[in-house]
Amino acid sequence: MKSDPSPAKRHISEVDEAEDEKDSELHKRRKEDGPHVHSKGLNSCLELEFPPTSLGGSSPSPPPFQYPFQLISFSYTPTRELEFTDSALRYYAIPPHGADLSFRYDSWIKRPEERGRLDGLLEACLHERVFPETRRANVISWRGVMTKILTAPYEDRDGWELNVMNVADALYFEEHTTEGKLKEKESMTPRNRLQTYYGYAFESFATSATPSTSDDTSRLPNGWSGDVNTNVQWCSVVKTKLGKMRLLVGGEVDCVKGMSCNKKYTGQPNTFVELKTSMTIRGQTDEARFEKKLLKFYFQSFLLGVPEIVVGFRTPSGRIADLQTFKTIELPRLVRGKKDAWDPNICLSWGDRFLTFLKTSIDELRDQEPNETPIQEGISDAGAHVWRVSFKPGKGVDVRLLDDAGVQEVQNGEDRVGFLPTSYFRKVSKSTK
Image (tube, rainbow, N blue to C red; front, side, top):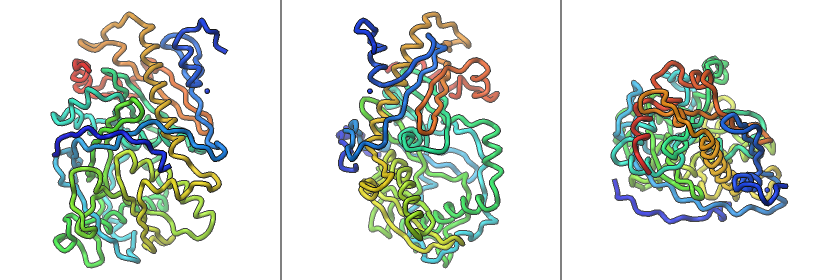
């Protein structure tokens, strides 16, 4: 692993809120941020509205963003064991035109739906190569959660929730998933299940176990490189910075560039490749739908520093009809000026505002409760607080503190303080920034 240079900050402009004067500084900041606060103390309900997404052609100045730097990678094995190796690393290979994405569907090993725990990422955070950055971080979460936060101003259909903890001056985010939601995910219709499989099958056709496909002895003549097992993942943990907030973000990486691109994996995100599938575009409605999907594609890659996205356009029957490679940094240009276009600067400004508001508000509300009583030896009540953030499409977010019953539901009978493993909580709580 290369030594950690000090990455330079850059703006993303190219990729393209009546209190009396005697009010406290807290009220002044909340006026600027636009939140509403109901009640007092830890029983408060905080609300923050989304920014307008129609700005009449103007775009807000985004906060500084630091290019992601990989701290460590790790693999999940076919039996879902985590190891700090690159055993699950895959290399990009050009998939064959007309490949059948239903191939070997009956051999799919599908990992059961589970709560969106941070455990794998947290194990990486304790690694000796990462722990110094863990102690400096202000936000720690998976890439998928951060993508949802940043793209929330443009979400117009589905609401969702996060569990949040503030431990050793760092915010931890976990997507809140109920048992009912997990059962719903498991009971997909046969059609939805098959379409989900198409995406995984595309990854098999578009990757190789070796940098050169000629050296991959498991690859079949039709380009298939192995049956789908969703236990297997190769993950990257990067450090980055949004505004003044230091982020540690983990996420799965589909593959890196190999011999087919005349590239070599550098140990950094500059050779990462994201793989996506989408229906072939047959008209303006399909085009508008695809351009809306590009917002998620963009931030999923942006957060890990993935420079390129390869999209396999498929027929309704699941055949690869076309391939197109997009440079992540250029995606905003593809939608700029169009009806219902999205603006990454709005998302970045919102993300910076949301994270700052949440961190400041939780700190100040917690400080209103000076008496911290241990709930376990070495674990204070304040450190174990779990907050629920609810995202409401087209409106904004509200934040509330969970009561004991709510925390127990989050713990789900496991050995945890809130949603963090007890062993991890104890270690980071003893550390100082």
